[in-house]
Length: 164
Image (cartoon, rainbow, N blue to C red; front, side, top):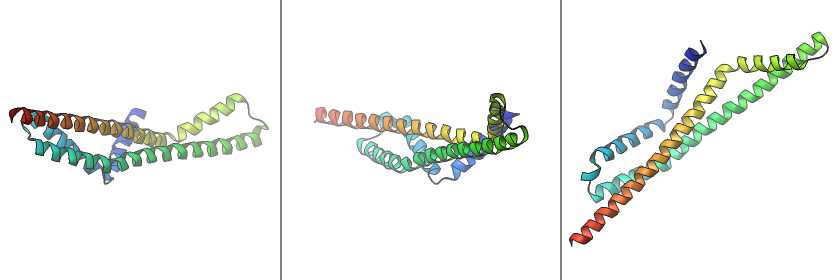
């Protein structure tokens, strides 16, 4: 049941991520990288320079997207912590009024119930965190592509110098 619910939550969070304005930019970056991959050895220096500029610009723009994912992940994490603490305090007070005191086992049971009651929010937080790291790695891959393009431009320039 929880795996199905996690999959359901993942679909919801993915739709929320796709609604962020930056998601479309990552799609453009993917298209550029695929184009470079297929045509790498046949691209001319000016074409490579133009693609490098576009990737650099998109990377600059996408840093906000990655920051937003991190912010959302952190927001949900703090919200979970706050709600969990509130639930624990309320339940502890309720048990204290009934029994007069709370045992260590009861305290742990209250914590477990509080965490279980926030499962949906925990899934959402975890998914935003996963997307944050996923896109952070993609940003790193963009750096690698830019470096490779720079090396190819340098190699083409060296070939031109040797040809002249």
